[in-house]
Length: 292
Image 1 (cartoon, helix red, strand yellow):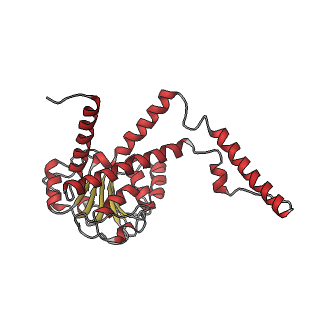
Image 2 (image 1 turned 30 degrees about the vertical axis):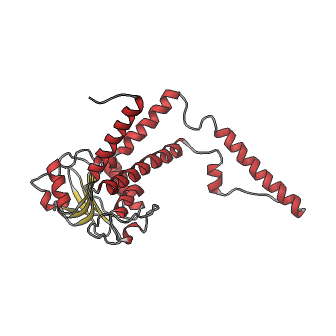
Image 3 (image 1 turned 90 degrees about the horizontal axis):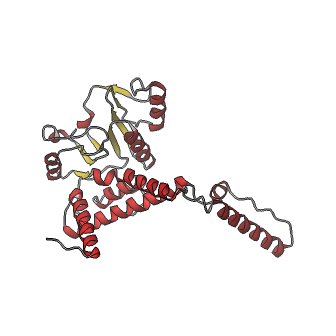
């Protein structure tokens, strides 16, 4: 989730937002309402998307204070433990009765929070309820979580919306990586695992031999747990996570540059569309096609 914190930092001058983010903040972009230290997030849905979003936001330093599911809504101002809730759902099949939060009849969609992350239903935010939204930032986890008119109304209220085509693009990227692997019929790293491990073993032996020769004494070098885990090179999971981070963070950088270049303020969605159209035009021009 670091790239989402990257967008928040880029569009806010409050440095407290990014104290847990591994990415640097940008400046000189339009201001938005300040975000308090210790970001509070509410989620609409706790399926695959909502569950993983909760997990990664929590790791990045946010606090999950509310979750809306089809049969029950949970709230805990001190924070809901995503892993504990995941285990509870696996065991019981529902979020209902989870001991780490209180069930509530409140419409959490309209409660005050820093981040609102709708992860399930389309058009859950529309012109009939958009004025009730009290979140400072809306992160569209699911596709089409708000109508176009609701989006425009949120922009007029100076509420940042990080659009679906940017937020959940990671799933498409991962599918692309899977397609590449299937096309080659070889898993990532399969051709290099053994070579990498032997190379690292030779490296350790070389260091050990050099120390023994220099000090004229026996020496045994034991690799750390972290080094041992990486001796065989990157796993398939490492490859996918690395490629995914590189792709999405690069895209976020391009979108933010487009926001600044075209003076789009908080309209990140328009920046995504503009960037996409520019790439299409460039591809057609490079291929020698002409527009009529």
